[in-house]
Image (cartoon, rainbow, N blue to C red):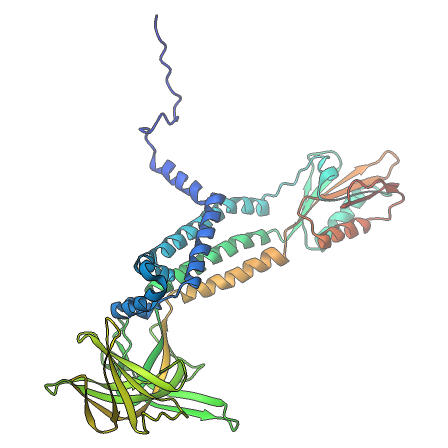
Length: 492
């Protein structure tokens, strides 16, 4: 007995070893991205990650990019999250919007939106350029918006009247001769459904803009520059430094602020590149970086020398932070190579502290690892005093200006995306694609039967416009039974 061997049809996948061409692989990936379930899953994942970013404390870019600062940030979270602190940090929970999970989901969601848009775009384009103009008779019996009337007059006269009135209302009118009677298709705002493509494009641009900003830009909301203390480095790999020549603040008679202004000089690689008077609504901008006036205050100019007399620090310490009771202000200087931080404390404006007299500050040293206090001392201006084995001197009080420094590389994409989103929403919400099919028959008694219908979703305003249009074609002579709550019909 012989056994027939069947050959599988060409193109049939015969198992895991079957070859898949690059084109087939790309098509499979494309189908995956325009799959609605995948899109919904990615939207849910994005919402979940964003919720995590809102519910958990977030380290700003400056803190996260500084290992010492981020370590201190994690230590602040440890009492609350205990043994989960490091695993949560590894998962990016404390810097969610620049974490790898958020980046991956953002890119995949953008690809999903692109896939859905490109998959739907040919249909939208065809509906706008090659509409379906022919319908069967049953369409006029079941369409969502429909009306039938029987009118006196010839079919051609009524048909010409209907065509003229639709054209006057700026409808595109296309005649169809593939059925009995006189037929036409009319539509208005045919390009408006493409607004969904604009909105989808907008979402992609906004997502990419946010992703670019979070991963290539930076933002520092607490960049302080003591007045008269020379250039202060901006950091973030910019080779920029800012010097505050002066700061002025003026007030109205009732004490409310009138104006804050900082005279700033910007240096790049030690060379002056810009000078600008920065105000709240007049930032200094250079190479995509904006310097916005944010706040101001007082700084303590400090000098610190080690036991050998070598100067280890000289600069203005902005007293920009307040204690919980708002009675004192303080600033911090970090000495990472020595393992401790120095805090400079002074009474807040208008407050009196019995421990710290005018012209004095309290200096405290803390261990960087354990935050345990090491030493503290109240020191007077102009006197060198020993604290923690160091010679510390309060030189004088100075003003400082507080700036918000940011580089938003994705801002242009977000602005373009926002504009397209508004434009797409207006197109789809306020200028809906309106479609009408019309058919005119001659009746047995010599009159004409006019049938008008539209399958588009229920819209009371559009429905009433259709009914008024039909009524304008002629005066009905007698009613015909209504077949829908959305229909009306009369006959002679």
